[in-house]
Length: 279
Length: 255
Image (cartoon, rainbow over all chains, first blue to last red; front, side, top):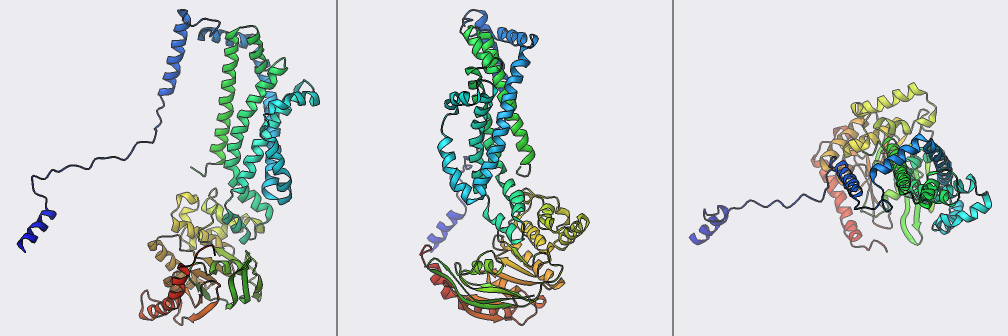
């Protein structure tokens, strides 16, 4: 009896010589935090190493010109007024092709997402044409629309059309059924349900699709301009390569990088504005 | 306006879900439908409001709904069904936008229902900023905004924690006392049914038939939480449902 009481006591208050340890923290981690200052430092360090390497002849100029030479090439481009000529030609093709492709893609995606017959008719067609690399169609477009602007715009239009279609009807398919039911239960008109419930629900998916189609458009822009164009960043890069002037070539590539960043920034802005309810 | 369900049956392919259901919902009455899970009570409610079509039989409106009712049969859903991109205000205005009421009348209506559900200060909050209970109150405000003739409530409290549930129950009672509304209230919670129902319909498990109708004579405003009378009724209901629930629980879901 006393034995038992003794033992119970032990459990309740551990004796002094029992080791007391704090429970080790083992949660946390696996969540990268923003470190704003790192990116510029890495960028700067790389450019400095590159400049030093070029300066001391470690990097042959024909392989990679020094950053200062690239900068000079960019300056020349600005001063000669050619920058605007190339850039405007590229932007014109990109904006027209991407805008038309996106608008048509939204329309086709909405048709597929909302009605049975267009869905049955168009979805297999989209599935069959989507995987074709659109560059393969460029020669055909040149025959159809000529070597001028028509074929280039058509390629970009095609390239941005299909991802938009797929993103749009995917977004519409994923709309929460209970919200549509709610709209019906309050007697909202069909058009109201589409405009006020389905479209905003599908918008995140549509904007995601635009991100993809925008980057595809830039790829196609450069490819189309390399095949036959007098002006345009793609033409400029190709010409620089033919003349072995790598400084101009790299300058052109930097312009493309900036173009891509600007486009993705604009889409981020659109997301921030249209999806502000999500945050 | 009264509602009458006449000999309603429903089958999904060969599976009988509801069988010869007949019941009446009188104006100013709250009718609760209880039953084990999968007995088709939510399906029945969807049919009452015209969101689903029964295989045979039907639901009939007797008499005209009040002239100012914009949407006579109005639902309150279990999952609230609020648009996340609209504020509380915007979610309510959604259901008023098509009625050409004029901006001033819409504003008045919204302010009125926000006040009745004690949400005035949350008019500009998005659903993600609101707790479950608040979200359901926005949904209730939205339903009240169209002056429904009959409220169809599909387990409106089931997605909430038990404290919030108690609070919202009190809200329902207060709302009903302020202005008696007609409602069909589907739930699996017998305490809710006993607190709110004038009439409680007990459905059996699949195929759902009406097993029993229990009327509670105590006025809704005078029902004391845990009074012996109510507890007795609740126990009776539980006795009726117990076996059904037990065997429903042991059924394979995909049969």
